[in-house]
Length: 148
Image (cartoon, one colour):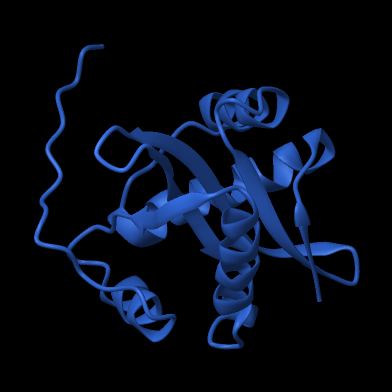
């Protein structure tokens, strides 16, 4: 298995996986075209973030996206893990764990203070996976304000 940063040639596969992820994790049907546009935007603008992909035999079997937050309290970057997807046939085979280990290595090299993620409260399988890699639930709740 190879873990690498994604490139523009991976955009269609990542977008397809993100559409599956939205449906599997939250029952949402999202637009492939809009998702592909969003994926391409991240892949062509490193200030927005980056994707790591797990690859086996030239096939993407898992992925996650990293986005950035600045902490004025710590004067350091915080990274957010988003869009975690592992192909069904590769689940429970440490793909996510390996992606997180690579993320941690890159984060340390970039003086990142904390790695965070959010999860839908009903996504019990994901919560179990996050606990397995050593992530801890925080006392924070996420609120949002839609503008468009």
